[in-house]
Image (tube, rainbow, N blue to C red; front, side, top):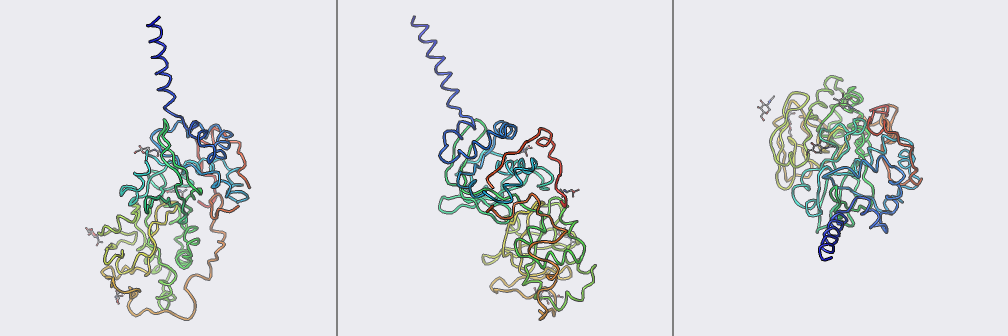
Length: 381
Ligand SMILES: *[C@@H]1O[C@H](CO)[C@@H](O)[C@H](O)[C@H]1NC(C)=O
Ligand SMILES: *[C@@H]1O[C@H](CO)[C@@H](O)[C@H](O)[C@H]1NC(C)=O
Ligand SMILES: *[C@@H]1O[C@H](CO)[C@@H](O)[C@H](O)[C@H]1NC(C)=O
Ligand SMILES: *[C@@H]1O[C@H](CO)[C@@H](O)[C@H](O)[C@H]1NC(C)=O
């Protein structure tokens, strides 16, 4: 009798032990006040749900009910309903490869270097090791930064489950768009116009693992007198000097100083001085813009491969152009006339969320082949 009771107590312990190891489904159900929309949606997407539930050592960034309701009537919601690859990419991007608690995400490790996600479908990510999400921490609150500089706040955190941990976010992450689409969205129309004139746009859009230093429109304007007379080859050489091929240098590497070889052949030099970060003599005015095939840092000057020793004046608010004698002209910002904010036929935004305000998520008929294949279905990539 006693032995039997002891035995059933043991069995009860075992049973309890198993139930304390929650599944992803347990967390979603337990947090139904904020995660019921995601739960309902995943339950209708059994294959994706199984993939997410089986992933080990991960951090699920779960959009809240409110976050998903913001997608109502968006183009993104329609596309997610129609394109299984996009749906897989979108969800994979919401899963960090690694178990990161909220304190991990607010510590130096992840706030200096963007964190890899499970998004590695070639059509959406040409970044070795998976597309990244950046984390920024202020006063204990963690903000995640995704494509187009989109910000999502973690509103509650550290729901452990068998596959890792889950944090609830207040808006969905944006999959980083192709390079030139991202540049246009960021208002860097002169850089895109120059890429088109030099016929390097598609090469840059499809190369993997790039670091791009993208001059802003004011930077191109400041050397307007010169660029008008450049041949396409000269322009191409100048643009190539803004590209570090095969290395994705997120901001902490640039801020760490040193040099990097460019596609043009000459090196660029990185400096951190007086609180600013410089590439040759140009100041980095926006760091870590995540794009489909790497990272963009926006700079306030056009870099000159024939002036690779140019040094900044860190105390000046604007830098001398790195091209001797160049001035701005009255003719408007160079290269921008051919670039409109809505894009041109060479650019597709198909499948890439650009804005976040649009149909409730429709459920997709997801085929196994589509999920495991992840073929590049998007033209223009
Ligand atoms: C996750 O990261 C590990 C290395 O830390 C890597 O081996 C694995 O392939 C990554 N998984 C995915 C799906 O990218
Ligand atoms: C990714 O990069 C590789 C190597 O540069 C290239 O061949 C491929 O077309 C790129 N994929 C996409 C979708 O741009
Ligand atoms: C670039 O810098 C490296 C050192 O960082 C040096 O070894 C190399 O010779 C430089 N290349 C050119 C083309 O100056
Ligand atoms: C090199 O850049 C500096 C600005 O950093 C500029 O003053 C100088 O005129 C440039 N030299 C040449 C040869 O373009």
